[in-house]
Length: 251
Image (cartoon, rainbow, N blue to C red; front, side, top):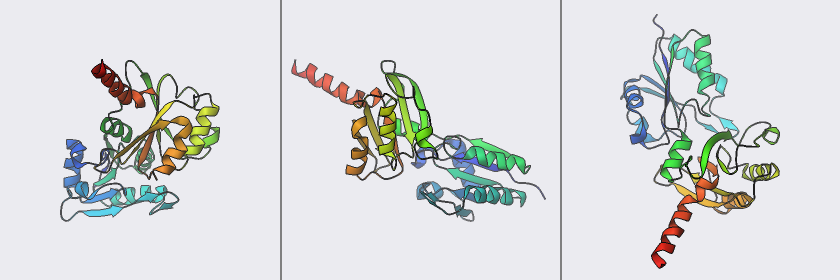
């Protein structure tokens, strides 16, 4: 029996028209689609009528399947002769566990291909008009996971501060610990921050504040995942531009 191929496909930040052309084609052709919970009905609506859609939605502390089970499912389907689209929000290789799934496929002798997607950080930055890098404000951008084992022991020194932008995935539930950690590492309490909830979707919210008030900002607005925390001077440039324009208008 011919072995199928596993396609690790990035679905981007949500809207169907932010899919790559290749991603859209693979979704429309696939007979088996294994997808995350954040994949919307408009994207799944591209699938053929006889496609088998398998949800492996993950929520904090509650997974439909553990990661090892997802790996085994993908390999089993491919060894059974089916091409499989593993559909993930954002990009498969940026906090998407795509690397683990690719390793499992290769270990089983299954062909695997990766189709990149617009990452959550890129989508959030663009939708909120926050330039993650800016010639006048940031020449370095770093991505970290805010919800992981050993968070307190991780060394984030140098990732945030003047001339730098820090983007934190999965940090809503640990916002207080994150703020304390960064300030303990020497980051100024007055560093501007932004929280982007449901980036690039119609219900998107962009909340701005200061690092010291990050946990209160998240709590006061009842921020829910999916949301990204962006820390750095770039998050305040829109406000600065508006203020400068207002000053020019007064003069």
